Image (tube, rainbow, N blue to C red; front, side):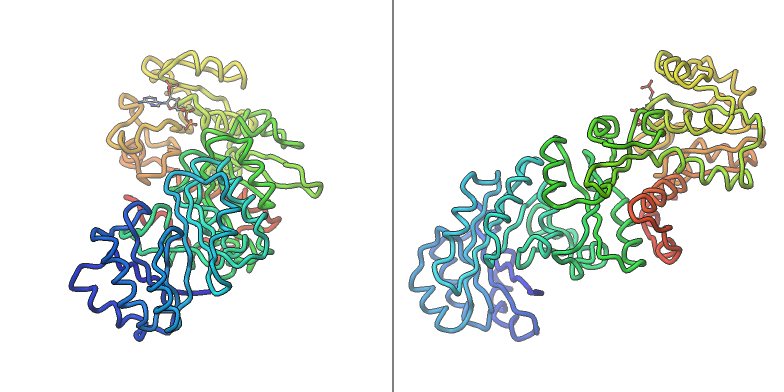
Length: 471
Ligand code: ATR
């Protein structure tokens, strides 16, 4: 159901007088709301004046009036209801999810013409799980039930699947409540209007995760293939309740990012050998028996653009330097060593480089003194640290290394697309591989793991994710 909400508490005094004109100017049913500050609103006047305002403009063709649970204004209700609008009887909790939410929502409606609405604030995965339980408890009751904030985000996008009559969205830069998405993103990216009870849910778990580019990649792919599926960010603070959320929603597949790539491994019933070799899982899907299967697409995602750069296969005896010894470096070193490359790992903290070198049978050296060894491992130089990314975007992790021009330089950083390290390599005439190519390639591998289909070319052409970032 598409509706418009007029948040009269956002209007300036001179605009208020024109509020009555809105219902006539649109074909959509309009909700009139004048929200108090305690519930996240901006109304600054007296309560008496608020009730008077609702009465004065409420009868001007509005389809719904939002009246709070504790508002006692029988005159207003009688007068306004006689003129047509239905009441949305609302309950807000900007601090949590009330213990007795099921009972309170059931008791909200004072007549069959009223729609109960609860907007609550999950503070973690456990609260989101409790909110989903309330959906189940309330069953087919006509209602609006929403989780505010980032932890509540899935409940908003999935409103049509869960059985909430609608969710709220507001224009970018003028968000009316925490966690609102703008209507265009909701419609075009998440395809809200196509979501229904049978829609398959996929997503990404991490912390932080709300700025992830994966939803755009996967949702564009689903749209191009005409799949009844949606991919959403799940901000996760605790894995145990989150996996109950995933069961409750019937989540089919997950991308996994920091800090959970290692922590999800015990939940896997089956895993690809790459998971144990790298010690990290970045992709999970539900097997036919409902149990989780895991893989790691970082290694093939890293290799795909590299193979293109080398014309289809890595040259035998390729000698490579990998800068950094963190999680990303593990996938890179695994991929290179498994493909016969001779690898030197350089790291600021030498013990981490040595540990990695022992595990994968490669060489290690400290980042500063090891630079002179690079001349013997320079067919390929892979940069896996955060140096080059904001706030270190002016920095180069190996400023003393002089490029000959014959190296392939590969930087995993994708914002900015061309780091200080890659700029120097380009200036010397090197071929370069940018981090966005790996990001896309590992996502395309995930898409295949989720759907069994190749990522559609049509969706690749439409992706706009990188246009938002500096070159
Ligand atoms: P990721 O999963 O992205 O690899 P990580 O596991 O935290 O993240 O690893 C970060 C890598 O970047 C490490 O190799 C780290 O070096 P240390 O092991 O010495 O911490 C490296 N790194 C981060 N900041 C750095 C800096 N300013 N200079 C050099 N290396 C840096």
